[in-house]
Each structure stands twice: as structure tokens, then as C-alpha cells.
Image (tube, rainbow, N blue to C red; front, side, top):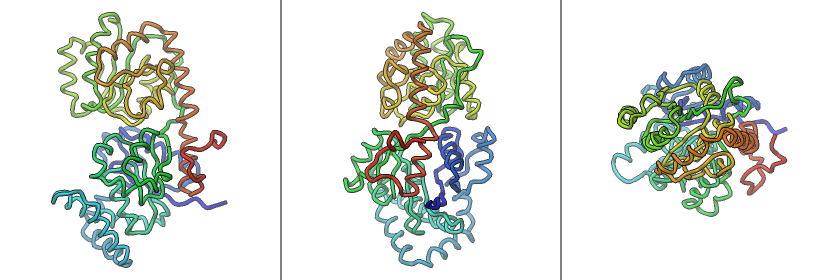
Length: 417
């Protein structure tokens, strides 16, 4: 049996309250016997460490910036990298060639190079065989330069949509070309990568779903049908919460007993609270703030309908959690959401930004408890079959080991554990 490679996982911030899927993916790989060293560019605020899993992750993660701010550590990393002068010069040329225009971006590229030297030294000390990064922006630039400095192969998970707004700034063409493989979270995501990648590298673009443990989610055993709506996400403009409030105000005219819980926080909270007051719906809304993944699961267990009015998404893990909890979902028809939600079966998809359409979809499910139950069951089956973390981590392990069949975007159905 081929020995499993020693893995390092990198991202910009870890653990983060909005990226619990990374934590679960790492836990899933470790459960399969993989050794995973967690690394993060920046420390996260303690508000992100609400549960024991997050606290343990924060305590055991290597933080690149914290190490790089130590002058002796930074000097030692440069001296270590210079032991292989060819790689060092190649990495400098790569950093220069992939820099975005402008002096400010040149300075950032220098920072990424210095961070990469510190990370490369750490990975060599830990005898890491493969580096994997989540997201394609700055942390992926560090991962690419780390690979060039150390000779350790790297891969990354490409999410979107933000990376596709500035694909040339972040040089996703170069990152795809240099990566051992790229885990794309959906077919839509993969197609966006194909726009900018040389066709010679399209075979590297594999589909690896973000996923959940379905067994961790279920309706509360004592739950009775109601009209409890739930949103989970950042309170930011991109999430479309102002549109949700407008739709909710319309729904209350015919369903005055409906209630909305907003889980999350962010820069738009004060504006959202003010808009709720202006619309006269504040009394029917609860602002729950940030919650741990276990607390979110309890909120899902008590809800009746999950709502996500976003303007931009990849394939939201929180929708998977809602569907695993047997909730019908009302979401916007954007990016890869249609690969998760089947219209009329597990929920409804509406045009983004259309409060009237969102309200109409809510009306359709709030008035029919049996339809909600049927949609919930259908959604649960989708998660069990296609977005199951056990399946996805097994596929990832195959990719890390280099054992994936040539050209296979996804494992064959019979290969799923």
C-alpha cells in the first residue's frame, strides 16, 4: 500500500467562522489516517473560536505572519532558502513575473515572497510532502511561491466567485499551470477556470465538492411545523439581506406569524437593523450574531425554511447544512447553486435582487407544510448522495496520492466509500 503523503493545509485565515467547511475537511482527512499540518497567513480573532474544534485548531495552527514578524525567524528563512540558489532565483523571477501592476502590488508581492520563505522553512522542518491551499487569491500566491522555493508540490481549492472578478490580478492561469491539481467546488467553478487556463492544463481541474456530514443534521425530534425562516451568513452587501427584508415584509402581510432569524454579523448589520425598523418588521426578526457550527446545527433543527438571497456565491455549504437538516431552501439562481438545489424538488431558486420573486417563493412553501416536508426529504437525499464529506475526503485523498484516473472529474459512483 502506498504511504499517505504528509499534508499541509494553508488559507488566509484559519479557523474562521465562515469557513467551517475547511475545518471539517481537515478533520475528515485526519479521520482517514492522513497527517495534516494546518497553516494560516493570519490569526483569527477569538470571536471565531466559539466551539472546542475551533479552539483546538487555533492552538495547533502555524501562523505565517506571526513568524515572519520575528526578524531572526525571517532572516533564518532567507538563509535556508538560499541553500538552493536555483530555486531561490526561480521563485524571485516567478514573483516578479506574476506581480500585478503598480508599486503597491509590487510591495505586496514582496510580502508574499517573504511569507513563502518562512512557510517553506516550516514545511521542510515538518517533512511535508504536499501543500494544499483554500481559495485562489493571496494565500494561493504564497502557496505557489512556497512550492517554487521548497520543491514541495502544491494544489488548491478554487471557490469563486470573487477570484473570477480579478482573474488576471491573481494570475489563476499561472496557478493552474503550476498546481498538481485544482479542486473546483462545482462544474460552474471549473468552467470559469477553463476560461483563463491553457487547455493543456484543463485535465488538472477536478470537481471536489465542499460537503457536510449528513448524520450531524436532522430536524429537532419535537419540532412542530411553523413559519420560522433562517438565514446564516455574513451581514454584508453581497449576501442580499436587504432584499430578504423587503420580501419578508411582503410575506408578513399574509403570514403575520412568520419569524426570521439572522445568524451572522458583519459591516452591514447596523444598516440592516435600521432597514428592518423602517419596514416595521424588526419585531419579527432575531439577530443571533456569530454562532459555532454546533449552534448553527441547532438553529437549523428548529427552522422551517432556509433562505439565502445572495448576489454572489460558489456553492454555499450552509445550503448543504440546511438541506441535510431537511429544510426546503429558497435561494438565488446564481453560479453553482443549481448544481445543489433542484427547482421545485428541494426548494426554489429566484432571480437575484428580485424581492417580489423571493416573496412569492416563500409564500409557496409557507402555505403548505406537506410540500415543505417533501422538499426537505428530497434535499436530504441530494446531500447524502453528492455532498457527503466522507465521499469528498476519500476523493481528495486519492488526488493527493496521485491515484486519480486520468481525466476523471469526479470519482465513479461505485468508487464512493
